[in-house]
Every structure is written in structure tokens, then in C-alpha cells.
Image 1 (cartoon, rainbow, N blue to C red):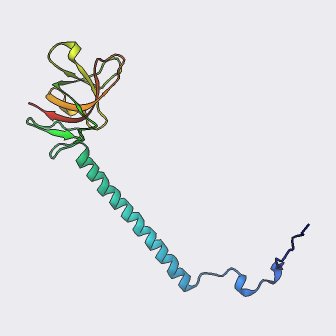
Image 2 (image 1 turned 90 degrees about the vertical axis):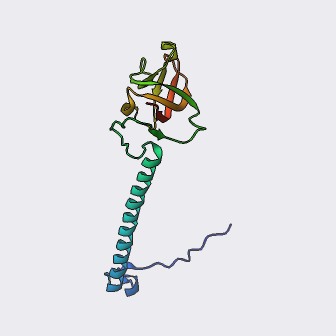
Length: 162
């Protein structure tokens, strides 16, 4: 059996050479630390700026048209808001938008001709439907299974028709 040899030198810490001691910052080290702090500050500022730019880009593409902001009622006339992704939001329906769902399903409903069986219950992960209540609209969305509603749709795009 081979026995390991201990080749590590034992260091007496009471007799450490000067080059192994902890030194105070020199002016060169202070300059380096100032550069590192400055670089860190610049990175943080760049991150804040890019986050702001990304959020404003996302708001422009995700649901509000020019002149329409969340929480305000768009003026009469044709307004189109929401996603342009027709593959994800392929189902569509026309009617008058009203607030209220059915037994916890949907936040709004689309009243269509043909009676209550033709009502589409709506929710939206993209748009604020409250600003279009009482208006005749066409919605595009994705249909989901529902327990109480005959038709439950997640709206991704809306166009006013009045």
C-alpha cells in the first residue's frame, strides 16, 4: 500500500513575509474600485433605460391604439386594439359589449342577435374591455371550455363597429 506523502509546507503565521500580509488600498487600487463602481452604475442606468424602452414598446403593440389609453373611453368611430396574432386569436364574434359574466365565468358578455343562447362570455388577458362597454364591437379571441357559459372567449383583439 502506498502511503500519501505530505509535501505541503507548514507556514508559521507568526512569521509571515510582508508580501503575504493584507495591505491597505493604494491609490491605484482606489482608482480601480472607482472604475468598478462607475461601471456598475452605468450598467444599472442602462438596465433601467432599456426596461423603460421595452415596456413602452410592449404597451404600443399589446393593446392600445394611438389616442386610446387604458381607463379612458375611446371616442366614437372605428378603433382597433389588441394583438395582430390571428393564429392565437382565431375565433371571432360581433355584438354589443356589456359588463358581467355568468356564475364567475367571464368579466363581460357580448350580446348577439338570436337570444341568450348566442351570448358570448368574455375575458381578456390583453385588453381592458371596460372602456368599450355599451358599444357594438367585433372581437377576436381564443375559445375556452366553460362549465356555465355556452361560449367563453379570451379576447385578444377588438374592433369597434359604431
